Image 1 (cartoon, rainbow, N blue to C red):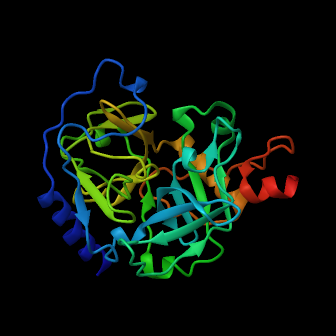
Image 2 (image 1 turned 120 degrees about the vertical axis):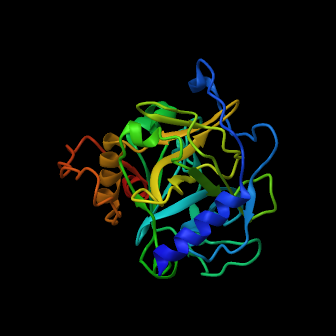
Amino acid sequence: MRIGLFLVVAALVAISSSGTPVRAGDDPGLVTGQSVIGGDERVRITNTAAFPFSTIAYIELEDRDHDVIGSCTATFIGPDVLLTAGHCLWDFESDDWEEEFIRVIPAKNGKAEPFGYEYAADWWVPDPYVDTGADVWDWGLVKLPDADLSFYTGWLTMAVLDTDVLAEPDFQPVIVGYPGDKATGTMWGLIRPAFLEVDDFTLYYDIDTAPGQSGSAIWSAQQGPNLGKIVGIHAQGGSVNSGSRIDQELLDNVLEGCRVMECTIALDEEGPVPEPVPEPEPALTFHSYSVAIARD
């Protein structure tokens, strides 16, 4: 039944969206930020509690007094963990975490919070992002204390797909999230027929985005074996928008982050089977929030 519902909502997004891709410029990697490209074609998702939109969460970043200092988007990729952008969690300029608390609100719809919320137990970004702030390492994980929320929301599956599959003219990439230029806590999304460009580490697209949508999963609405599979993480933008491509290295890195935090990730059973990640040497500490607190 859940797959059938997925087909219905994916079709609704497709019908509501339009636009012809244009090819990226000579150096799309130079763009920063996030933007609406041309006219704003994003569509508001009103039935946020329907799968797969139920898997998408508004995350509030709070200081030690629980005052909200920012927001991003995250997506359930397992029963107790969500995928988001690294810059939502770690501030490279201050060399510290952005927040003291993260409130995770799946399927938020304005003031409505149909499944309630939970505070994160831990969060993580890869060491190379902490060290460099480079876009190619801009991802992170948010761990919940239990699987209570995902019992209602479900989750999407991460997949490592070949370049020729991602570059198909009807791959139908989708980004759905919580843009800061719309009413607070409202969910918006857009689908395009294809990516503008696919390279080894980055996906480029003219899907309209705005700050607040950072961390949104990039997934496919193409009917068939790739429907709903997460293939990237939205993080950057400008004249074109871009996100990190899920490749085997990124997947292995995320698995290691989840090993550190003791969470569970759903993987594409038809894709590559990741090899077990060896225990890190004592000097190679991963930047997990709780680990950092323990070090203090």
